[in-house]
Image (tube, rainbow, N blue to C red; front, side):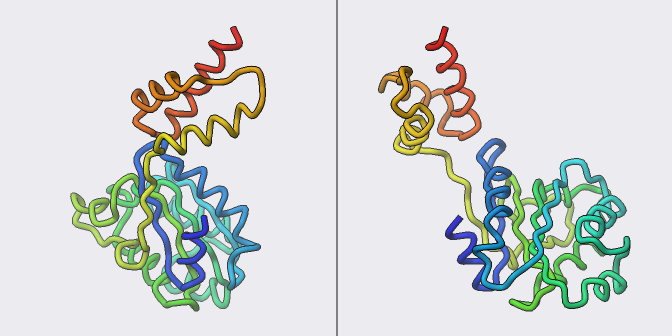
Length: 208
């Protein structure tokens, strides 16, 4: 969180890179909740879940609706944004490499986010692969590479898992043993989503 807001306040956009269930969407929601108090330049926060967006038309309709402007694109969109300042959060931004997304929408998004602190848009995007790989197969223009600084969502190490378990169990009657936590680390590889499910299953076994 601190690193993301440092980058945003320095004028950069940010990409959160990590495998499925690494916590990208959860972090995005926390950034959304904290933006009002932590952004030095106030921006309207707009978060789009692109997992159900299938092309240019869907994207522009979704974007304009969430911003609160008439449905438009190209020059009309540039004019409609006017003096607005938007923190645009794109969850599952990998989908913009799909066939339904054309180069013009990617170029416009890039142009709107590539003017320093005064850019109409600042971006926080999530993706499962590094940005130089997301559009590798399509040969298309990447709207994110070189304007989004990448933050890798790393797997949790043993210390992080123990902190997570301790924060959830507190001083309650159920406590996981060191051996159980070690097995959890081995079985999940530290993937946060898998760790959470493993904790739930182990807790349920204890309760039963």
